Image 1 (tube, rainbow, N blue to C red):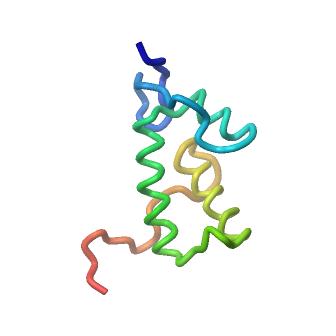
Image 2 (image 1 turned 90 degrees about the horizontal axis):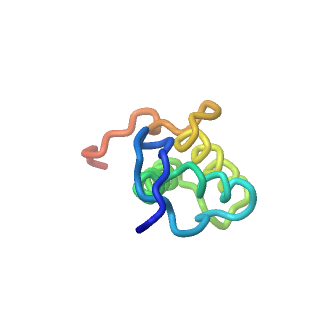
Length: 93
């Protein structure tokens, strides 16, 4: 049976990630508190944040901003993590 945790994203019991999805202490914290489903929700949000803000994962400042959004989305820390201002999934460009 897979390990179950109380997911801070889903606010319920769910299947845990098989291993830390991120390096360092933050990765360990995510592994202990975020379910596989909650992490997948973050990954979807991350793509949107990168696209909406035209961020580059090759840029250190962009990575720092993405991590701030991750902390906000997963743990409710800081001012980031919500949908980007003015985001509309059906908006035509």
